[in-house]
Length: 298
Image: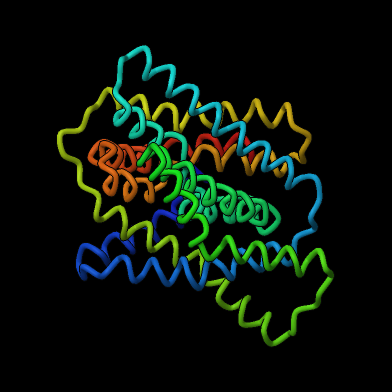
């Protein structure tokens, strides 16, 4: 109960504020999320990679992310084959289970649970997940050549992608940023996490459940909230990394479905109602699963 009150509840209260704001004020969600994506999040990403001590741990994080994605894709393809699901249904389940909300939800949870040291790993992981989701998420939503082209364009349109590149060049080149410029970056970076938390609350306010398929939603919830962290646990045993990094990656892998996947599902008609319902269901269930998992690692 202490973990829930000290770590999860503060995060849920901010989500709730965004949820209520959107229900009452009906704001333009796209405009609000654009501010977070194009200004605040790139600053957080730049700050993280600019100050990061780049070493083999980041390579391990990349390997971990790839293996986790492949594992969940295999699970979904096997289930789709056994159940006889069509490509659209398979894509909807992949969107709901393979891509976790490591940014809006995961990053603040990690910050409250593991402090600044764990938060650095969390930001690095959320960047990797954003790139993976914008590429493979679009691909599986659209499939075919158009999906591949749109996936590449989607990644290239992401401001955090360029923030990573610039930060890595400056970091590896041992270039010193001017103090006044870095102060501006720090200011926006510090505001990014509260902002994306409010955005998630606003996104959840726009999700509606119609004719929920309980069997598929339950399956997806088990994969996202239980199987994913279990796979992550095994991977952290196989890959060399610090205990803190392992804990952060396992908890991050247990996050609910990413709200962004609902947008992809709607755009490409990959079972949008199912994806939306799973996003909401996993987010609600995570209020139970995340505290239980945190009690094992804090």
